[in-house]
Image 1 (cartoon, protein in one colour):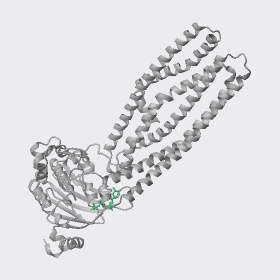
Image 2: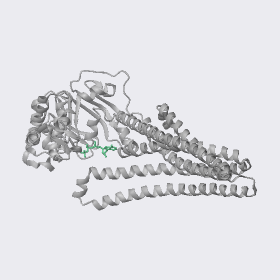
Image 3: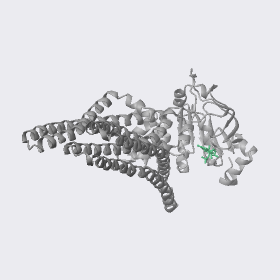
Length: 571
Ligand SMILES: Nc1ncnc2c1ncn2[C@@H]1O[C@H](COP(=O)(O)OP(=O)(O)OP(=O)(O)O)[C@@H](O)[C@H]1O
């Protein structure tokens, strides 16, 4: 709850204004029954029309002031809750951007999405609720109690007992609800995760006719969420009727106690019952608002986890900014993913000269992506050092480091916008000629030219309106626009036919001859013409050298060669 207060404090002025109008609204509600009792006791009883009109007009004025206050309170409450929601989302998003891949793996993307969307909505509802209910209800409740005591002081002990019992029920409601609503949010994470996974791999699901399995997974998560919700709401559902019953029992008791007070004026009794009803409604509102508070507390805890998450990587206090030429060195590097039982890289020693093209090959899961991910510091080596131009990458200015490196990931990731926008992701100030040159090298100019809008062609989210090969070529072009010193191509030519792939690699040799290229591939034909080839197996270096050297010395490389090319194409 500290978190919510912290954000409310930033908008204290508007929050107080809203509270002021709420107080006015509550006062208006409280005054009505008293004036009604005057109308009955002084006007109706004595058939005094002027008094009835007089008090009636006052009641009308009070109702008007109450309605005006309600409108103002609604305006301010909505504005405050929306602003707080926006700020929470902004701050979470900023912090997520600071985090390293290790943090993101731990928090899980689907969970981060739920926290930024649904959990923040819970907080917004709560903040809106505080200003609509949490302030008004206690004012009305306390005011009504004071007025009952003032009008019929003999009923004070009954009121005290009822309030005590109701408070106990409200407390029980919170104790039971809190952990249950935490579980609800976790189950929502699960459902989001399943939905997200399905949507991002919908083609694979269709190709494998796996709709039924996916539907089962979805149903399972959906049922788990429903069950958690039912469990939370069932626990909460017991309390609302109990509170209702207690307060209604109080009203009956008060009426029963008043049975002998013949002198009691009927108007006062009416007002007392009216106030008791107001107490009932206020308590119900408080109890409902506390339900929202319980959910908000669970959500606030989850939001706090994102806001407080510190980047797993330490940024150097005095970062080094060496001139980057593209000399890469791995010294006794080992690495294990957080939570993984075993190391994905084991004692890697490697030296790559500036401007060299190094092919990286190995079976799936042998550690190829993990190895290259250590260079731009997507992850940090657990043991040993990764050096770029003699400088430990963990001591370098991260911005400079990442500016010097372009990565084309395994899965081509494009963004909604035009082709030009996507290419400019590489470098915002790249000229039109530079964009075209990069597209040419990546063999993307051909299909860009064929589309009616050219570079202004709009891409859907993730580049859905392009083929796999077109997406890969655009991703390569985007990396080239950056003019990197180190270019990491992570199996990103897999969707290209052999002729186009050869054209792209030849283009790279010509235009990016000064760039150090790390070329990951499962295809031996892709890596065999590289200056050197690194053969990985089980996170360890099995061989490093030219194609001919590896054919002579590395059994695994030979086996890959034989399985893909056989004896017919040696060299
Ligand atoms: N985020 C992660 N968390 C935990 N383990 C991971 C993670 N990413 C990869 N691994 C594990 O690390 C090992 C190396 O994975 P990596 O992706 O580097 O292999 P790869 O050689 O690039 O495979 P592929 O050719 O299939 O892309 C694998 O055993 C994999 O299961």
